[in-house]
Image 1 (cartoon, rainbow, N blue to C red):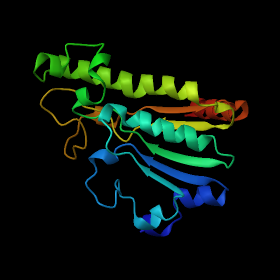
Image 2: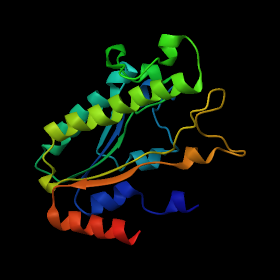
Image 3: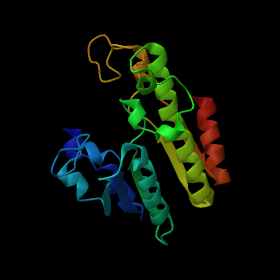
Image 4: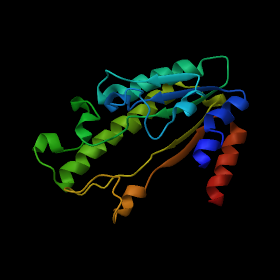
Length: 201
């Protein structure tokens, strides 16, 4: 009930004077004609000033199209709150990065089989591309002096061959709940608050 009646994060951001932006880097696989996913409602969407869905782009390039939108929005003179849903590293992992960026191997595609070692190699390549390379490009393009970034994930990954990678509801592998949580800013006062919060927790 509270999800339907309480203010959304968008309404809080607008009240604080921010332009609100949602970027969905996973929309290319979304078959919903309204392009709403993850339980987003039409009411919620009405509070979003800039609603972007990235489509007709290969999985390995979706996050970099998302990055272009972030860069453009951050250059606006108006303060902006951006929620960016990255495409990230999803199974099948070998589609999440260009073949030329295969540093670890043999991958599932190279070996032609799904074993713990090939799955881990494929996943490492996907994370290297969608996280490491993404942030390399993000930091080159973004002035963090007046920007704060919170980076996390909605789930971890189970990498043993033959089991579902995530979203298991009965007796899940605990690693499916392990996610990163990073706070990044160039604002020194805010950075000190983040560091104090990290120590406290």
